[in-house]
Length: 189
Image 1 (cartoon, rainbow, N blue to C red):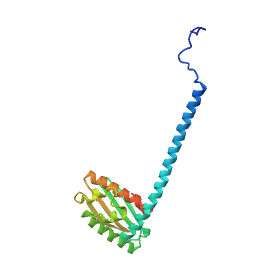
Image 2: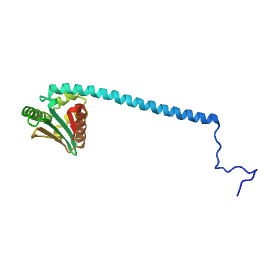
Image 3: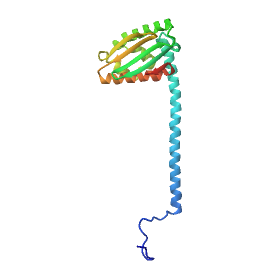
Image 4: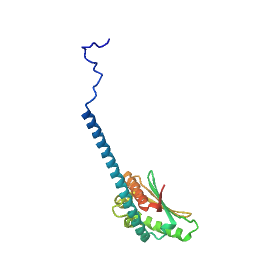
């Protein structure tokens, strides 16, 4: 069936909007694009600014770490690895034949384990700050936390475990904070 000259056009045909409306829609799209670009630039600026702050924080952590940890941070590597029931912290000498560094690592970690078992996390708080993620829970939970030490050929390993999910979550936050703060001196497991 074809349309007759006096019949209305089919309803599925739309008229083109007037020129002023097309211009308005283009202007609105340009403003949205400009807003998206501005927001992206702001996020990038924040990231760069936060990266500068992170670098400054890591430098401060390194300086305070040198006061607390007796071994040479340039000659050792920290590894922080979360596990299902807690986490593992490993410190090893970069040179497996460096007996002095290995002895310093083992002595320090054994002392830390003894303090941690009593709820004393003063050394990490000194290095990373008293508001360190997970720290408050760990300090208040020594009876819900199992901490063990073992020698490794090039250093030592501390294992943290708990059957309390809040303590496990705190351990994960605490280990992640240390990993971030130690920067190039640390690795994630």
